[in-house]
Length: 440
Image (cartoon, rainbow, N blue to C red; front, side, top):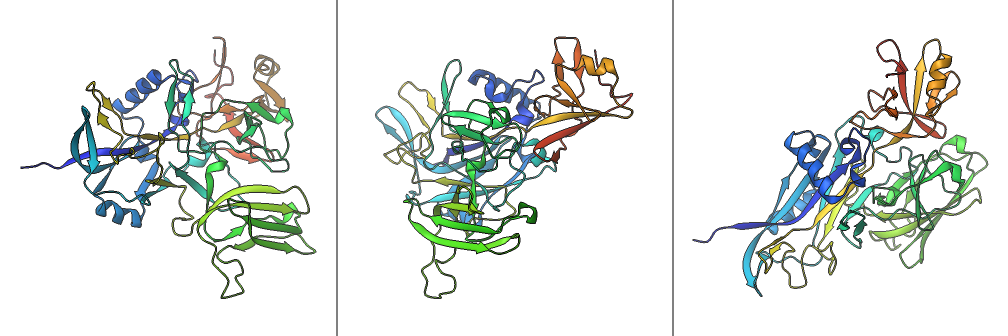
């Protein structure tokens, strides 16, 4: 009597540095592979890291149907989820290989919605807070490249996020934005629309979720404008991947414009015979008040977009000949037992979330004393009777206070609530008898 065998086709792991930064302040993504595995194993063994507490992850309705048809199973894990398939086992050139019982068609794709569950998710996660476009994150294994990790020893990982966008003069970047300046990745220390080096800090590319991933839109949506932006003329140009203009929308008036509806369902929505604009990848170019043109990559797809979703994961079977492929050229699963009797793993795709950095702002009724101001001068500056960190500091689940050797410990934010004021993002810390500024 034959038995049913399921093998892992792929795995999705969510890695959030708010929870994975350790008490010494070391980012999870600054560790080598062995250290990462050890830290994850410790977190899991003590049940202190579970993505099911952070996200609600579900297959789309159409994906549920596909999974039934192709004998696929989804299993949720503390790190994310795994998708497996029923297989037949074959011996190929001394290797144990697995082929799906139900052959996959190349155009098959599986979609999974992601919704945050924690109330402070936006505060603890380094993502943009203000959006003119109502786009959500689109994460796929299609057309991605491995990330080379320094180690030691060097190794490769498979993030689903895109490369960081190139800097565009005139585009406004929120504090925390990652931008590519000619091959150098920098993080914005405050909101800025320029390249003033005092507003940016060099960093290394960890392939975190970033603005280049926030591209999924419906074909019909609202572009948000505030009256105080004082924009009276604005032009939207939609171009396809070959830079061919598909549609242009001009708006203008004598007074500042407000929210603008944009319809990209048809080339001309006033003509019932106008050809539809297909779901696909495009570039949306925006020019306001005859200023610099700013470009946004967009993926128009009303079928898989949902305004209440944080992200859509789209796993494609037509990604071939790459580390992100689900099958090899012979149609076998990637996982196998090789000729040396060693197990080769299934593809493990990572969704990497950076924790937010804020300016820590200390408040004290009656103000701070001269000794307190002097003792903290290396880390804090006095502004309007408040002591504010000179540089932004990461907020973390582990308590990582300011340290000055062993002599100075400054209080940390008690909850990851933040306050956005003008160009900067702050964490408020109130000093009192039970929460002193100086802790020796």
